[in-house]
Image (cartoon, rainbow, N blue to C red; front, side, top):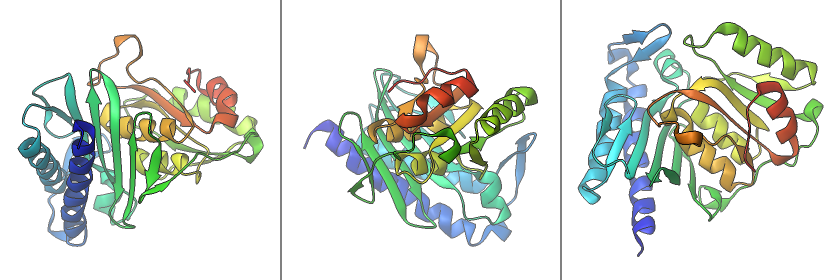
Amino acid sequence: MSSNERRMQAGIEAVRKGGAHALDLFRRRGDLVIEKKGRQDLVSRADRETETIIREHIAALFPEDGFLGEEFGASGAKDRMWIIDPIDGTANYLAGLDYWGVLLAYVEDGKPTLAFTYDPNRDELWTAEAGKGAYLNGQRIRCASTSRADEATMALSFNFKLDPPVYTNMLEAAIRKGMDHRRLGSSALKLGYVADGRFDACVSMLTNAWDVVPGLLLVKEAGGCVVDFTKDGHPYDKPRPAAACAPGIRDVIEEVTGLTLDG
């Protein structure tokens, strides 16, 4: 078994193990103490415990690998690094909304190599390996064939670190093109839905690597177009815009966001 095959197996085990723990606490969320990291930015022990479970599972198998996680930051090697968002959609999670996911990516020499997005509520697991396609529960997936803006639905994300007009101007431009839109609270699941054709695009004008790196690889491997998150040496630990879409609407997504997407 190759090193990537072993890491693929480990990643699947890690997100399922972490997801099971997060789901158990979700069903008992009345016991959780909610803390604020910033404006509309919440955290609980569920986030920290889930990240710890994932880190420990991977570290036991690949002690030479490093990590970058939302809750515990960066540690270890940077040329072989796992990026973790233990609960993407924490606000939904703590409000009792079952739209959140567990995110994991393996990055080698700065390039996303493996991607894992797990929705424990629906037992949906998206996986991808660079150059080998994207899968949902083991079945090959492809982006939608949509080619018209007025037939497309775009999923959006917003956070309060972003200057509001950057978001509202982009949204107005998309609406004027005839695009529909949704804002559901988890970039992880929305990018999975772009990869399997449920949505046509996903845009966040300011986001962190742990929110989108796995999903961007999923969309790319499903035949879509994505932002290169580390273009021009942009570090993984600094936020920036991200977008992904079905190939037929690449031009309109680039126009309304001002971003460049790679096919």
